Image (cartoon, rainbow, N blue to C red):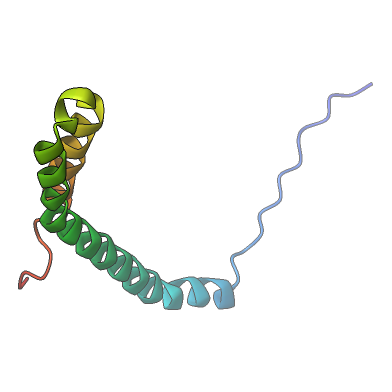
Length: 91
């Protein structure tokens, strides 16, 4: 028996597919910008309002009994500060 060589087929890319992909790129960019703005908005307000949750915890002494929960809130607040830092700033 003879050795058979593998058959490779090349399929040319359809101009319609290439055009559709190029046209959808701006739409994807605007969706990404909208999502980034929404995440930044939420992070900004979480960073701004979360410290008000510290006051009742400090006043009632829950900080000493729920140390891990309080540390988690502080860490969440720090992350929210970093993520929401650029919210509503002129570019």
